Image (cartoon, rainbow, N blue to C red; front, side):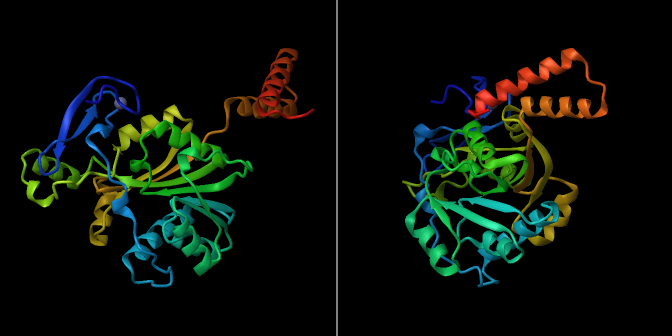
Length: 305
Ligand SMILES: [Zn+2]
C-alpha cells in the first residue's frame, strides 16, 4: 500500500488503475499534483527494456527514426552548437547526430556493454553508472541534458531533476520525453485495464517498468519544486500522421518537453545588482546586500578569494 505521493508527499491518493493478469498491480493518482504513482511494493521489471545494439547508420530502423524526431526538435531550439549529455543514451544515436553538427557529446548508460558498444562503433564517450547516484565529480556543466524515456523509470522525480540541474549550466536546457497520461491512449487503456479486458495479455509474472506517470500538470509541479521553467510542452505518438493533430490538441500518448534551468536566486540577485551598478543607480544599501549575497555564494561554492 502506497501512503504518500512520491512527487508532492500528499496522502490524498485515489486508487486509479489495476493492471496485470490478476489486476493486482496498483496505480494511485495523487489528487494534489495529479501524478500516477505505481505501488512499487507490487514489484518492478526494468530488465524488459534492454535492447540489442542498433547502429545509428541503420537509418530506417524505428529506434533511429524516433531519435531523428527528437534531434530535429532539439536542434530547432538549441542555438549554436555546445555540449550535450544524453542520460540513458541507448545506441548513442542522438549524440551521433549532434556530433555531426559540431556538438561536443557524452552519454551515460547503466551497463558496461551498452557503453562499450557505442564507444567501439562510434568513438563516443559513455559514462557507466546510475544517473540518480551520479554526483558529477568533475563538475562538468553542459548546455543541454537529454533524458528520453528515462524519467518515468526513476522513483524519485525531485532527485532526478536535481541531478539534471547539477549537470547543466545556468539557463541550460533539458529535453525530456515520457508518456503522457492525459492522452486518448492512456484514457482508453485505463478503462480497459480497470474492466479487466486486458488480463489475458499479461504473463502471470509480468511487472511494469514505470514508477511514475506524468501529465502536464504533475510535470509542471515537478519543475516548480526544482527551479526549472517550462519552455515547450508538446505531445506526439508513434503514428506520424496524427502528430499534426497533436500539435493542436496535446493529447498524444507521449510528451516531448523542453525545460530551462533557472539561475540560482543568489546569482540572479548578483546580476541584478551588477546591472544597477552599471546603470549608476546603486544605493549604499543595495551595495551591502550585493556584497552579502556574493559572500554567501562564495562560501556555498567553496571559492577561494
Ligand atoms: Zn502528488
